[in-house]
Length: 628
Image 1 (spheres, rainbow, N blue to C red):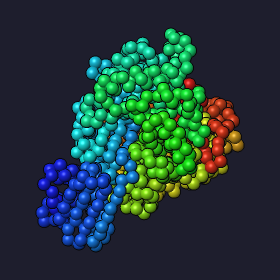
Image 2: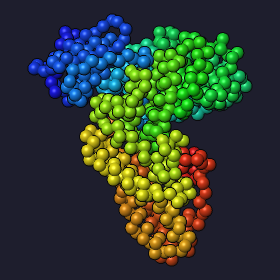
Image 3: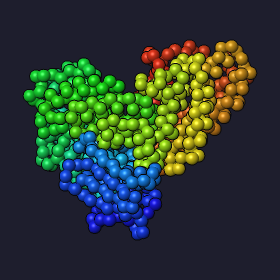
Image 4: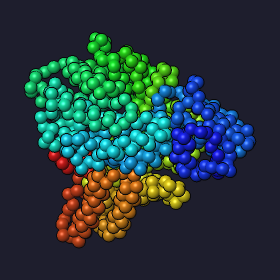
């Protein structure tokens, strides 16, 4: 398709040129005439096509990107004349990308994602950087972690600005700083392993450096300064030095010191709100019983925005009540929901859709003006951020419609990403297995714990006993093989998940098979498993590792992959040991195998419709002490 843009505005022409390649559109004469007109009137998107010529009217630059995509979409679906109007539901609709859990997106991958987000109409992006940015004069900050340079952040910001997207720094200035504080330079600034020492001048000099380094390369004056889940504040070195203190007073005093810094740098800060809820600071703020200490309200700063994060509830009323509670803080809250990419190796779209639909409907009812979709990468970022694109699209469509229709979402997803919504939803089947309720609302993650658990020790074997796990994953591998072969630019992504399914089709019940054969003294079956199935499984793990590595290096910096390399190496080494140990037993060199003598117990108490959830690799691989 060829389109002739009618506009004298060079920024307009540049923006549409950035969009054209991904849309497989050529710009120039002769082509379908498309007149582009900016307006200072109420923010909206208006598109018409009379069969010969198109017209786009827009206010925000990023809405032009969305409108251009819509124009192309409608022409491809049906070349008949049309009119289309959209009204933004939120002033800010953005995405927060976690680049602190080992997977640091390369600049070209950030740009690729920004183009897709622009087509969606998303107008803000946060890069969540705990220590993955450079601070001049502090060489150990982000050392060997793939940190962004100032020039890289500026390049990302320039690109985002050209698309009409605000790039907002998102850092931490109290907790969640374990890796930043692991080096000797930080020893005098630590309250606990992951928490800065409040009331210490060296701490505030450090924070000033962080805020300056994170904000300097970017145009925006806004900054997210974190401060969530700092449960150990005042409990470590601060307690030893100053004695016990009410933590609200300590937290509030620290916040005001940090706001003094943002004021000096003329920045507009926001923080996660959870530490101001619950009488003990340990109560989750996201439940309907969240407690806000009324006598604290008068003391909370008003020049900061409070971000209410909640990725857990399917009940719209819960969100409404929590938003109403947040309004008592004195400012309209920012809402942060979640695309569930952090439970393991695959996205959970059942949970994502249920929580997002409920949350964003509540936000519309309560007049929330700014929303963000968070994509966390807990425990090594095993799930690619691009596997979460369908969740981002869901957020985007909520940003332009009162309700989101499934067919419309699929059509938009195809246009904006080149992906197939049905295929991306299928990735949830990695964890929505036999024994797991439809939608996986309890966030069970068997694909993770079955992949990384030890074959001989089988900490999770009892959780899948009696379930056709091998059969489930064998069927899924066949389904995903079709997607991997025909998914265009997403072939590498689907190949990884196909390989994962192939591994789990052998590994998910292998420990149970070994235990049954051992308990029944079936040495021939043990020999068959050791000499046939285990080597075949090892070969599949090698292919899985290679596919995962290709996916990682297609989008992320090298630092961080070593962690997953070690995990795969552990699986392969333990398979070798399993074959060796079984060989020793069946050949009479040892008279018992301690690992297979041990009774299999439930790893954890399970909810109905769940196989359980364990997100930490070191708790999956062994009951022993992996490190520390």
